[in-house]
Every structure is written in C-alpha cells, then in structure tokens.
Length: 111
Length: 414
Figure 1 (cartoon, helix red, strand yellow):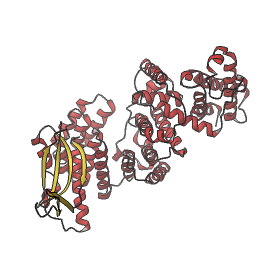
Figure 2 (cartoon, rainbow over the protein chains, first blue to last red):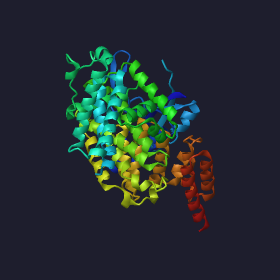
Figure 3 (cartoon, each protein chain N blue to C red):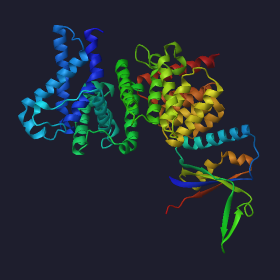
Figure 4 (cartoon, each protein chain N blue to C red):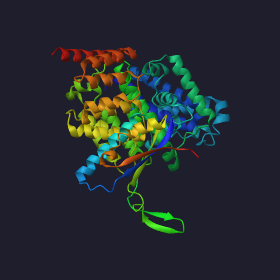
C-alpha cells in the first residue's frame, strides 16, 4: 500500500445554518469513517483556517491565497491505496464534491 | 456464608493481596516461594477450619498464618536466608525481625506494583494475561487452560516462559513512578481489556469460568481506580465499559452456555446496578481531554443499554464507531460500524459500504451481509448466511446463523 494525500478544496466559504453545518459534519464523518472501515486511512489529517498569507519572491507578503486561486484549501487527509486510480476511487464519495469543491489526489513520495 | 463457600470466596479476595505483598518482599526471582506460602496458608485454613470451626476473623487469621509461615520459611531455609534475605528490602539484622507488612496501604501498593510487573510488554499479550491470572488471581494452569480452551501443557509452558522472561529482564516489583505510570498504563489497560474480552466473548460453554475471568479483570481495573496515581480517565472508561458489558451477562447466555442475540435478550435480566455503575464511571472518565478507545467503546456500550431502536441511538453509535476507527482499525469495529450505518442511514448505503470492507475470510462479514440483505434480497441473504456457516467451526456460531436463516425463510414465505 502507498500513501496518498487528499487535498480538499472548497468553492468559497459556505454560508450554512448550524443545522446544515451539523449535517455536513455527519456526512464528512461518515465518509472518512467509511475509508477507515476499509483500513485505508493513513491519517485523518486536519482542517485549515480559511485565512492565510502568501509569501512571494522579493519578500512580498499578501493576504491570501484567494486572489490567485479560486478554490481555497479547506483541509487534508492521507489515505492508503495500491494505486493512484484506487485512491481517486476513494475520493469519489467526498461530501465536499456536492458543494462545488474538489479533491486533489497525489501520491506521497517519502523523503 | 458457609465455610465451604467462605474459603473459595476468601481465596478470590485475599489470595492476591497476601501473595502480592510477598512477591514484593521476595522479588521476581522467588515468586514460587511466595505462591507456595500463600497456597499453604489456604490449605491450612481448609484443614483447620473444618476441624475446629471458623476463627473469629478469618481474614486476620489468614494474614497471621501467612506471616508466620513466611517467618518459618526464612528460619528453616538457611541457604535462602544467607544468600537471599540480604537482598530483601526489609532485611533486618536477624530474620526473626523481618516485617511482613499486611496493612491496607502496603497491600494496595504491592498489588499495583505486581500488576505493572506482570503487564510488562517484555512478554506478549497472551502471556501477560496468563501471568495475571496465575500470579495475581491464583488461577492454576488447568483453570487457565479451560478458560483459553487449550491444554494445560500449553499454558504451563506459557507461564514458565513468561516468568523466565520477567526474571531475565530483571523486572522489579516496585511501585511505579508517576512518569512510568503515564508511559506504561496503556499496556496495562490493554491486558486487562483483553482479559475481560477473553471471558466475555469466549465460546467456552463453562459460564461460571467466563464470569470469573470478567470479574477478575474488573477487580484488577478497580484496583487502578482506587489508587490516586492510576485513577485516570481511560481507567474509568475501561471500567465503565466492563460494567456495561457485564450488566448483560445473565441475559446473553442461556443455561447451555449458548449466546442469546441482543435483540432476543430479556431486558429484565440486565443488571441495572451495573448499568448505573457504568454510567457513573463513564461520567468520571470525561474529565480531561483524553479520548481513548475505551471511552468510545464505553459510550457505544452505554447506548446499547437502551434497548429501543431510535434514530438518535444509532446515529450516536455510528459516530462513535467512526471515531473509534479513526483511532484504531479493527475488523470487528468495521463490521459493527457498517451495521450501525444500516440502522442510521439505511440498508442500501450500508450494503454498498459493506462490499468495500474486504473481509472475505471472516464469517462475521457474511453474517453482516446476510443481515443487510434480509428484506432487501432474501435469496442473497440466505446465500451469505450459508457462506458464513461454512467459514466458522464454532458450534455456537453455526446455531446463531441457523436461527437467522430460519427467520429469513419464514419472512420469505409470508
């Protein structure tokens, strides 16, 4: 089994009611729990705060990263799979996809 | 209590106390001497009490006799006295003055020291469990062999190997320091958890033996609760889990030692006092920010004390299993999680998830699929149950599967 990074991107910050947020949390937990139940979760990872800064050449620091990238990174997880295709298959059920987000799947090259 | 019941009772409660004090006194090199002295004390009790009647205070009698036998031993074994008693921590100028401290405090300290010594990860888990039963609970090789459904030679060798390892690793029987408690408590809890499970999930038909194993695990866990330094949230959570599980002991096994399925259990047989104790310790376990697998399993067991099938119950159980799997994968957690998923989110979603579990060697996997397909596709349900039956050699499992198949056939006929 190899490790793959899931990078979750959200399309803007969702404007959800507490009930909708709770329902979304459940769907995320059910999805990640399903991957764990297959013994394919490497690390549940973390969520990221929406605000951040981007440092560019010439010591230019901007608030970001929204100016450049339409979708902001909301979090990451690490899964275990035999191939990139299998890892991508696991990403299909991600609840973020239903609200316009995406999952980038990348094989981790251990240092 | 009649004398015939009193001695086995005292053996269960006092053996571990006296023997732990002596283990600590003699050290790991000489645990057999401690065992012999305490066994001999109980032998004297059964001989003398039968002839002369019960002493006024049987426990105090045992302590006094054990002390005297220890002193006699030291007196009559000059080689031991010369070579070994120098090393004894409490060695006095002459062996007559060696103090054998059977105060409550020293008993508790000694038992704690012994639990940490026995549950040392220098031995594999099955050896640790055997040693805990043998050294701390006074179980003989035959009893342990019966509990593990194996023969006594296997257990005898396992115990010898374990004791030898403790000696060669020079494991000290001493009060663990605070840092050591933090570091080693998880290994100790795991052994006690496995010991409990050995009794609770065993396919052994000997119900009273299974109960004994569970009780021993609970007694040892309670000892950790009684000690301020080891009274940690995870310990409370583990004890809570044991209380919830054992509350169903009477309801889940029939007279023949066969398991009764949860949905068929008579809730009147659930022990309410143990449920309440489970709730009490579950509350205590919520102190601090630690969330161990024992917390999650205790919380799941808590929800199972509500027999009624409500959406809230299964949603909670599902989320607890999700979290449990994030901490630690196990096939049984994966299967139970999928069952909860069916109850909370519906069978179709659960079937799709079950197909991905990749547990095709496990009869419980096919039992789950049989359950999920019941009412959805009864033909498939029967096929899965059939497959489950061929994968298990346990008579109890086959009986349970047969019961399930009967239900499906009855339903299909309607």
